[in-house]
Image: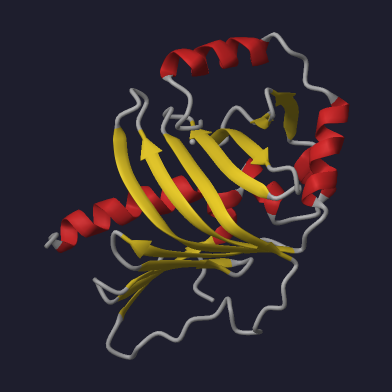
Length: 231
């Protein structure tokens, strides 16, 4: 069984990469080739409009996921699977069922990182994690978010590149199926770590319970409030 320190380190990688990486089917050489192609391809306004139209089709998105995180050399750092729920504006429920249970909830203001093994809930300011983050295009209709990115459609993938030189995530790649459902999301951070997430059993615009983004903390659990101003 993992020690508490090992567990905390693993959870830190998973949480940051979720908010902060390119498909498994691509080798490093393929990615270099694609990267060179994209650098010579001017971002198209039409491509951005196409992606905006696709994402505008849903107000919420629910699916099962499998996730793999790799380093700059392509070596695997972590794998996980579970369920995800995205709701506009800026809400997320990310529940890991394998290899160990964990839950992350973002309610639009606060991120709750819930660890049953440690019996601990960590509270983080959502803006600190999502500022200038192109992933937020999935959970908002805010036009100003689109002004911060360039979009290129290449080989069946929408590649979203941040214009901000200081952004934690430099690019996000999205793949949709023939039914306009999101099936793969790949993000790359400034340290060239890659987060590849594949989706199955996708449902869009479903009726949701009112308390889906709340969590009742048990009295005996530790609450680690890392927000600048405790709310």
